[in-house]
Length: 115
Image (cartoon, rainbow, N blue to C red; front, side, top):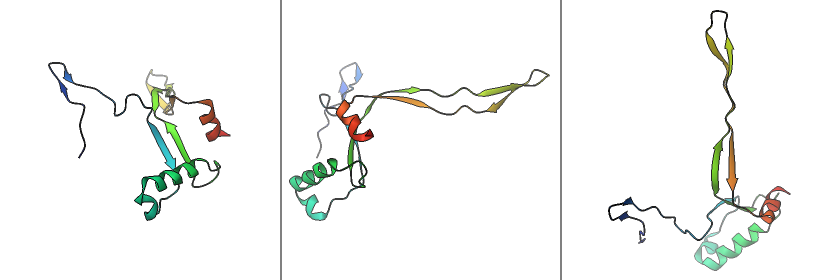
């Protein structure tokens, strides 16, 4: 059973709230697996995950924890247009999609993923 802390607030409509407003939420990228015995206890699962987080970045079982993005900016390339002699404009090439993401991160975290 879960407890829902967010709901309707008086006459102001829905109340917006984060799952854990004081904690940074992360995305985990992991190629490893947990055995049934590791699922059995929280300590065994945590030990495996911590060990996989300390592996080399080239290892298939490496655990990467990346922060959720703060901001996403659309950087789509403009379409290339062509004009005919009678004044009709046609799209010659569609612009490529592109995005710029902003994250909360630390220098140590970036080095562990990139270097």
